[in-house]
Image 1 (cartoon, rainbow, N blue to C red):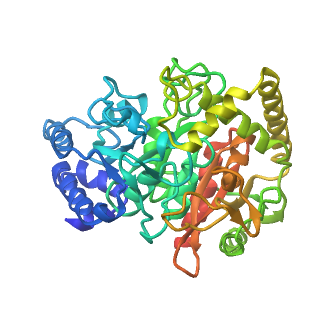
Image 2 (cartoon, helix red, strand yellow):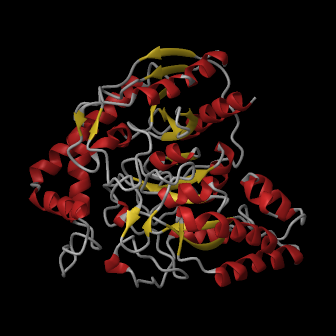
Length: 459
C-alpha cells in the first residue's frame, strides 16, 4: 500500500469515495511511510495513531452509511504546531509550553476535520514560528526531504517535509515573512500565501492589523487548492475576512499575460544559481505565449515597515512578550524581538503603517501594467542543518535571523498574494522555488497562472 502515499490528494479522495480503498487502509499506508522516513527527517511530532485510527474509521462508517464525509475525505494530515488542537499537544515549539494541551481546536483544524481529513499529530516548527529554519528545544530539528544534512526551511518546515516525503497528503501552515513559501521552495512543493482577509482568523489578538496568515500546501497546485477551498470559506467573526470561493481544480489561465521578471526584488543579494534556475521558468512563459519584461515595484521602506511591525506584534503577543513570568526561557532571537518591540514608540508604529500604505499604492500602480511577477523565493539554497541562519549572502552580511528572507518579507509587506512553485534543482540536487506574485487581491488569477506553468512544465 506504500504507493498510495505518492498519489495526489485528489486521487486519494477519489479512491476513498469510490470505495476502492478504505480510509483506514490509506492511514496505514501513511503510517508505514512515517515509520520509514520520520526517524531521519523528524517532520511529524506528537503522533497519536489511536486518534487517527478513530478518525479514519469514522470516514469509513460515513461512506458505508451513504453519507459524504467531505471534500477531504480520508486525507491524512498533521497540523502545524503553532495551531491549537484539543486532541494533540500544542507546544508552539517552545519548552515553556511543552505540556500545553488546549481545550479547543482552531478554526482551521475544525474545518479540516469537518471536511473529513484524518489528523494524526502535529508538524514541527521553530519556537513560535520565529525563523525560516525548523528547530526547537522540544522536538529537535527537522531535516530537508531531499538532503537530510540540510535545513527544511521554516517556519512550516515540518509540514513541507511531511508532505514532500509522502507522510501526509495535504498540509496546513502559516506565513508572515515567508513561512509557507520558503519551506515549499526547499522541499519541491507548492506553498501559497493568500491575500490578507482570504482565510478567516478567529484567534488573532490584532484583527485589524494583520500580516501573518494561515494557509495551504500541496504537492501540486490542485492539491493545495483542494485544501484552500475548505479553509477559505468566510467567517463573520473575523472583521476583515472576505472569504474566497476557491475551486478544488484550478483552470489554467488563458489569453494575454504580461510577466514581470525580477532578479533581486529590489537589489537583494541572491545566490546566482537560484537566479539561473528560476530564470529557466521564463522559457515556459514564452512557450505559453506570455510576454516577459524585466521590471519590479519600488520596495523601499518595506524592510523597515515589516521588521518594525513584526517586533511590535511579538512584543505584544500574550504567549510571548506579555507573559507575566518574562521571556528569558525563549531562544535569544525571540528575546531580541521582544526587546525591539518594547523600545518602539507610537510614532515608529505610525510610520511603519504609513510606509505599508505607500507600498500598497505602489503595488496597485505596478500591476496596472503587468499581470504577474516572477522572482526567487529564497536568497540561498538549503544550508547545513546545524547552522541557525546564514550570516552572509554573496559577501553581504545578514544582521539578524530574518534578514536573509527579505525576498519573501518584502512581498508580504506590499500586501501581495504569492505562491512558491517548484522551478528545478541546483547542481547539488537541492530544490529551488519560483515566487509567483499576483496583483493586489487577485488570488484566483494567480492560481490560474501557477496552474498554467505547472501544467506546461509537466507536459
